[in-house]
Length: 304
Image (cartoon, rainbow, N blue to C red; front, side):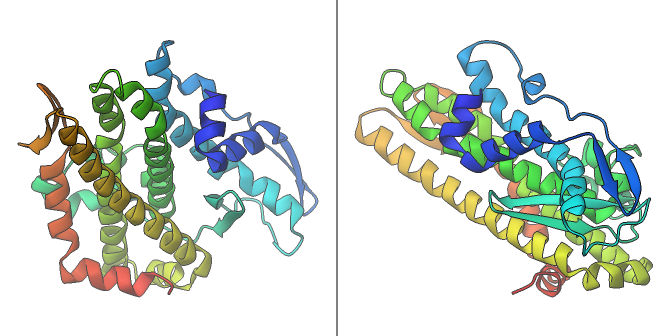
């Protein structure tokens, strides 16, 4: 597990190394803050075969990044005397890349569960439950925009390592073309999270603007939050474009080798086997996100 992550995603490997070295006690403004120990990354593996491990890496990175985002702020705060920490303050440490960790202080939020009033049934896609409903203690609900951004980043990083494992599957695919189906299956569901969580975050900001104007002003005034949203969004958007380009090239390469490959009826096919691509749900979300109330909100929130 560790060797694959180190070879194919050095930023995620550095994140895991930093997570493993974190203490459990911090001195902040004369207070001692005690935290639990982060869950060990290997706890997120599912199964023991080589393919089980490869297929679990997106979950390992995703869940470990949640731990990093929650625990690493204390490390940053203890190293930076400029931050005036008060007991009860909430922070997130968002990994932009291996050298850029964004410390974001939380402002007041409302519970994301309220979005169930705004999201129509046709757009209640795979992650509507549990991230929006039923009401729970998930960070995506109780931490509002900050929790939704945490999920957005975790899905980006999970998708990214799945994408970067292509050389491993290409080597296997030279003898067994169906290996590419495993590669695509590891990305087909999690890549959709870009559209889902972008939609949730913009819907959250829209509701805040109309129903919680003071909170909305807090979000708009939080330059660290807006910068982090901008950078993660742009990276995830580019990753999805790269995935589309890779799929197109992969199908062309396979067909040039006489191995039939195509996309039909929401499925990616190699010879007589196919895996679902969630294309219909993605198109519904794309159509919704193209509406002016979302494009206006996104343009107002990003930092250029």
